[in-house]
Length: 281
Image (cartoon, rainbow, N blue to C red):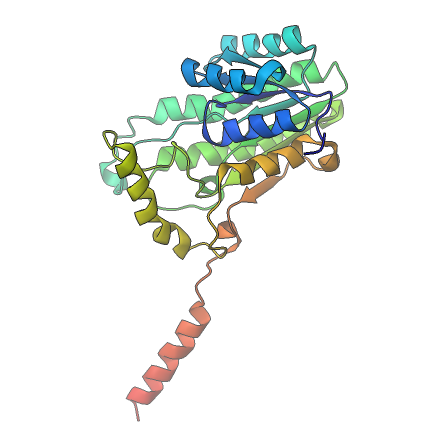
């Protein structure tokens, strides 16, 4: 590993598992000191212990302003500053196939975490960064915020809002040398998108992931399975000085899903035309 983040202090929310954990691990390997933030105290503390003296754990519900204030204060008190803020924590909603039957039971909580959490995290980090030479804020959205689709309306709506808010905040904060960018992961296996039933055993959850892979792959040009480390590498780029001229952008880490439909519909159209012409002969 290099030392892309040597001398920098970062906060990673939702860092007890998945993309957040992979990113915290990579940031530390690249020289950063990291505050691990989560509401899963046991898992968060375990990650901090594994990362050693370069990391601490701070409990934070990102939808609460007082928790974010305490989180930023912890980074400054322990490590002397804050240069990178990764607003990664997020929640999903109960899957609902039919919009007419969706009672939106999770809407308020999804918005509080996925939208307000991003706004609060950016604002509170920026208040320190604006007085100390700038910094990089990275907000973890989703391809669900780039591509409209069926089901999970609350989640999709929250990710669209997170992207739009990030771009607006990027414009606002550029005068202070603060960059704000978004990541848009797609189909990265994590607890958030496991889709396993609540009472599924680990073995059953693993089988569900395997069974669903062919469905995920059907609309993905790259058939390679993405992993949390792929998103962490993208976060490292946006956190580092290599992206010094990049702000207000959305970096999709999705195997090409958001690029467009990988099915050759033109070939299907030509085949249909040929079939229709043959039928008339």
